[in-house]
Amino acid sequence: MESLILFDYDTMRHIWWLLLGVLLIAFAIMDGADLGVAMLLPLVTKSDDERRVLYNVIGPVWEGNQVWLITAGGVIFAAWPLLYAMSFSGFYLAMMLLLVALILRPVAIKYRSQLPSEKWRKNWDLTWCLTGLVAALVFGVAIGNVMLGVPFRFEADTLRPVYEGSFFGLFQPFALLCGVLSIAMLLLQGATVLSWKTENGIAQAAHRWAIWSGLAVIVLFVLGGVWIAASVPGYRMDTALLTANDVSNPLSTDKAVTVASGAWMGIYSVTPLAWIAPALGIVTTLLAMLLVKRSGLLALLMSSLSIAAIIFTFGFSTYPFLLPSSLDPAAGLTLYDASASHLTLWIMLLVALFFLPIIIAYTSWVYRVMRGKVTPETVNDAPHAY
Image 1: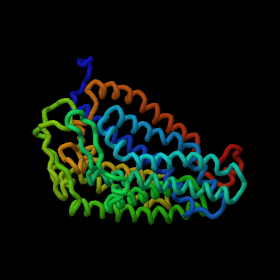
Image 2: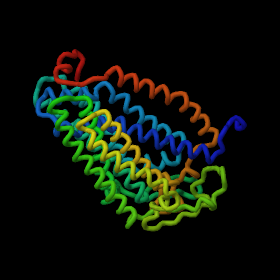
Image 3: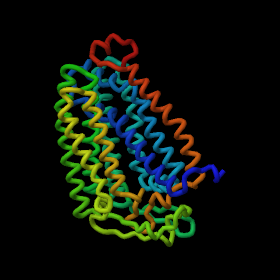
Image 4: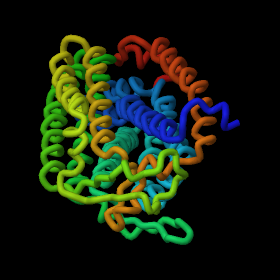
């Protein structure tokens, strides 16, 4: 079987590092739009009919959009088992908070219009809005904590992960900035979706919020970059000391990790082309703001590219780390020492090459079938509308 594997072990690790990034980007773009629309509910609507429009903008697609999160979670479990074990145990309470938000969201969507009571509907509207806000915040805070380093270590004899942090310790100032940046990104994504899919008052309000959220994205993104360069401890690993295609062992004696302020910026001096990612993040955000009144679809495309560029910026900056350790830097998880076996990665790649095109084709078909504007009239005329 090993003779059938076309790529060596380290190449397979890089392929799955990129695929994990692509899946996270797909989730942030697709389901991020749903979260953004939920957060915008009290900001762009005035009547019950308008609020129903927002539910029905995302109604046909939100369940399919969650597939990307489930797929990314499965990839972490199968391709990066040590990362799964450490992150899901260390961030347990944060994960539970996220799961509560994601569980309440479909309840709000499906129950909201079941009764004509105004109080009933307003309560579910508030719940839906808060689920979007909490989920966006938790995702951003998680990214911020990865860049700060997570307080964990491994027991030398068993490789059992030990997390020594606390739930409230996750909400440090830099992590909160990342959380607010995440909220702004998804607000922009939701606003561009509404500018594309709605008309009149909702679309006009969405235009305004696209501009404000876009400005927030640029300011927070630049501020975060300056903060990282000036004072956030970064992690650097000497990859020249590693043995090529070695088995995964986060406590390998060949691993040399140093911690220094601004070290996360090292990739940009070694590989100047990496600057394309943050530059593209700013340029595409500006284009989304400029295009939102002219073409909602083009603005949505630019907003999606902005999300991809910002996430790639994070990935390039932290390379090759997946989860650095602030407690024991040498125990930090990297793509070289946290992966599953060579054979497992190869089998997973074959499965991904088969199923990903199917998911993409199905998603494209759904959006084509559900094309067109959503208005109060179309909602009231549809017997199965939310």
